[in-house]
Amino acid sequence: ALGVGLSLRPAITARGALPARNARLEGKADASVDATQRVGTNLLGSLTVNTDFAETEVDARQTNLTRFPLFFPEKRTFFLEGADIFDFGLGLGTDVVPFFSRRIGLLVGREVPLRAGGKLNGQMGATNVGALAVRTGTLDTLAAATTMGVLRLKQNILRESSTGLIATWGDPLGRRNSWLAGVDFTYQTSTFAGDKNFLVGVWAAGMGRDGLTRDRSAVGLKVDYPNDLWDIALTYRRVGDDFDPSLGFVPRPGVHAMRLSVNYQPRPRWRLVRQMFHQFVPVLVTDLQGRWESYRVFMAPVNWRLESGDRFEFNVVPEGERIVEPFDVAPGVVISPGRYHHVRYRVEAEFAAKRRLSGQATWWFGTFFDGTLHQLQLSAAWNPLPLVTAEIEAEHDIGRLVAGDFTRDLIGTRLKLNLSPDLQLNSFLQYDNGTEAFGANTRLRWTFDPLGELFVVYNHNITRLTDGWTFAGNELLLKVQYAFRM
Image 1 (cartoon, rainbow, N blue to C red):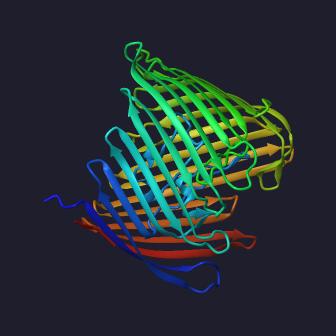
Image 2: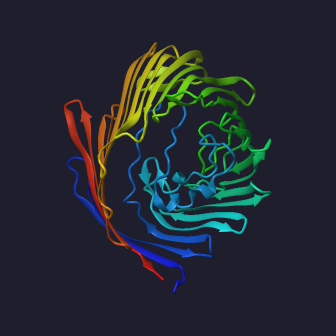
Image 3: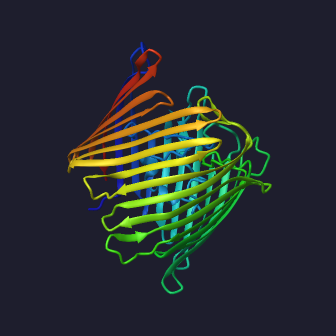
């Protein structure tokens, strides 16, 4: 018998921690339960109570040399499942994200209790459905208990096109009357001029919240011709100066932004070269009055993919910034208001993933605001054995500016041991000299039964003070979960 399609997965999490040097040991245990119910052939309903994300890997640290916030991807399983259904608009990327699930349950780097949540995602005939509602608890004085949610509908029309809507409500900080509503339409065909791909997408959104009085709307357009020889796209967006959705991510409001991307990608009949990518990507950003704020022209005169799978690239990137308010590019190094024009260069080599040692090495250099900046970046993966993978991500930045010099170091390493199909050990170590902190996140996952899993997670942090390295905190978590299917 197939059963009723119901799965219950209770879990117990126990944790102990020393949150700081000379602190007392803290410990607690929590119970949680997740349930999923198949609703029809292609629709899944999920329920979570007292949700725990103990097994989620910590975020990878990033270096920020801009005046805009960084984007960190979602890693929590409950929000990742069916996340693509909530995608909105054509070609928005991270410039405008009407629904950003990390706004729920995370606040200023701390975890907010997720008391209960329900989700529905899947397909009903020609309609894609995504709905989510959650209730979060209090977090000290930062956030009160609140209810938030999102609804996304997308209807498939014509042969390959779609139209849809999105709506969100609630605010993680408890700000009143928070909402967002948007509509989008994408025309898509794979038979343009016979056998070519062609897309046109338009979208519009508006939002509200108490205290916002300026323009709270955003609109955009993308025309895309993504084909093998020519890949051409034109994108435009206008974002109001008060467009700041409570459950969204909009790093740069109050702008007109235009982007043209022209890629010529021939496949020469050469012995060593598989494909060439000649790229020209100008970007212009103005304020709502039409005054320029930023420009960038990305050019790739050389970007060759070899038959071996390796790749070599050289770029020239003129850039400009009109700075209205000062900002810190590094601690104690302030970029003053003014107009800046600089040219950046990049040399990059990528080694094919088929190799036992693969990765990518990048060197950015050239002028930067009123000085110079060198950025050395390395990402590599080593597979000495089929069951062992070691990865490294490293960046070394050297800035020499009128306001001062700075050096930024960031390094992260991962070790993955697949001891058996049922037992995996992952360790993620990170250091950056901005915080002078070293952190280790080690996770053991044991599937002791086809329906049962045990997670052991250990976090250890140390920091460097004037007198050397010192303990900054640690935490040990044990989580066991078992699924019952009916």
